[in-house]
Image (cartoon, rainbow, N blue to C red; front, side, top):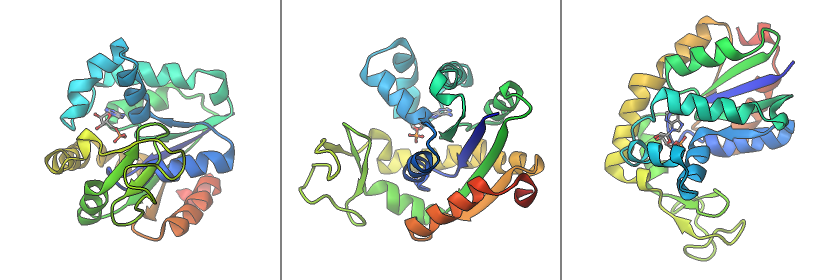
Length: 220
Ligand code: AMP
């Protein structure tokens, strides 16, 4: 039996940071489809080439490409006990494909990090991403000690192409239209837990750990 923890929420809700902490806490792999696409892009793979134009425009990569890449990843032995999903699923067909593929005794929990658009725009427009380790800084909220250099690993800090203001608006629109309905989908399955993602990061994490360990009955 595996535990599948799904983090839902708009871009900038803190899914990446929190998923990585949760994965470490539970000793499970952190599976981020955005990170997998960025790795594919930097390695120049076929998947990377097919995904690039969608990513640069803030659009979703077509489901069949995402599903193939994701299912390959979670079939690896390190995912046998479970995994933390970040940025997947993002459409109803992706969620349905995941549910259909999971063995019946797998434990699934979907946790929605809820934040307003205004918070999202403020967070994303100042975000600096480490090009080496994916660590996050922010020009106002967590500026690096040395400009342009990641505090954690010394990698170069860059502004992601899709964190440009017009692309942020597009990503938010895509989220509202295609991904937000998943909250209702998991609620209907009795698997949803909601968290206020605008709280202090440590508070969000504490609630996330609770939600990830709550029994199925409590989350319904
Ligand atoms: P993220 O790092 O999660 O914000 O993802 C960056 C970009 O990768 C997104 O804007 C999409 O273009 C693409 N992407 C990541 N995950 C998915 C997914 N589950 N479905 C479709 N596109 C995705």
